[in-house]
Image (cartoon, rainbow, N blue to C red):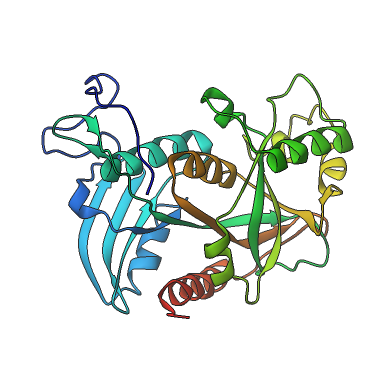
Length: 298
């Protein structure tokens, strides 16, 4: 349990609470959220998760933010759709934290703070030929190319700082792009998901096309940047994949005192130029794996 010294009410303009007592974007009240939360980017994936619940107690929807809370094998779980990108993750993480660590009536942060277990289930592009489409990539670290955490106070730990410095040097990372940052997954959650997954370093991109080296009618500014980034290694880990949310989850989650993990199904293999022919089946298997891993007492 962490503690905070802030005891002044947060102004209404900074923490917007709806008339029903729910947080502004998610439309959730504290009692509607479980302490274990599965985060999915695609709003339609929430139902894929909750269809496997033994029961559903709450269904809340506002914009792209959909939440179902229920029970699976005796454990209360929420599934929340974040939408795409770390900008949305900024909204979701701050509002989930507010639900458990701020008294929404008085707008005063609580003295004793609670930690949520936050697990992202997403899709991703693998960067190496030995990671097949349909495989599951477990993010031990995430390197953010979006710059989100740089807007917040705080300093990275020595390991994260060295990783960023080594990554910038190895890839000759362009100075006119956002400063990269790095953060690790929660070690206790990682142990639950190691079976049958590919561990690695995830690159979180601020876009899907040029920021991930794709070229349609506009060419990326740095044609060989993907090769330079994907060849980076840190100790026993290599860069394994591109996606768009994990660094925001890890960095904000760690700063707020929550436990975070991210597992993504390989939708495309970028080096082989292949896509998954049966993504719904692969995602269903991943959802069941995550739910069973979270509820397994061992």
